[in-house]
Length: 198
Ligand SMILES: [Zn+2]
Image (cartoon, rainbow, N blue to C red):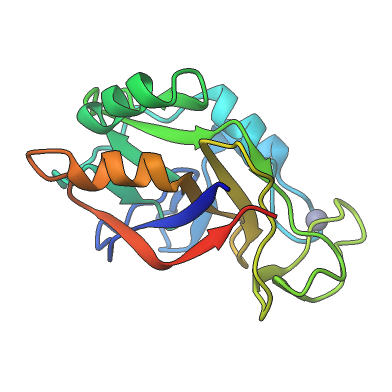
């Protein structure tokens, strides 16, 4: 029976946004290269399409951790962590380069689980946007999230007020590889509870 472990970026203080920046008045605006993707009603946009367009050249990674959480919901990994994932989860994670920091990339597992209406694992807040259908917020509920057996790595596509809020999960076997890597990988928080395959 497969068991899964959630992984979160550990206490990121990187203050890193990938898709938005401050305008001269100090207001947070979506970067121009993604502006046409923004929903006029709720302000959210398709992060998957945005990632395909790439990351702006002025985004610089200033920490040395192996995993970093961007405030707008994505995980970034170091070259070293990517190499480990390539070895143990080849082609199961998609990567997007950070042009100004070539030793980092945005990483998103290809296997995504979207929250389901009526599933107690999720608490869905607010009505869907009338234009794009996105929820205001989807956070964990009281139930155990369902993951089928046999998956090595994937992610829940939860939702924050900003947009897609990714939560990675890995098989216990892959979690053990990541935990036991020497020198120790930094920036990874392994959720203590194990999720049995549904
Ligand atoms: Zn919308």
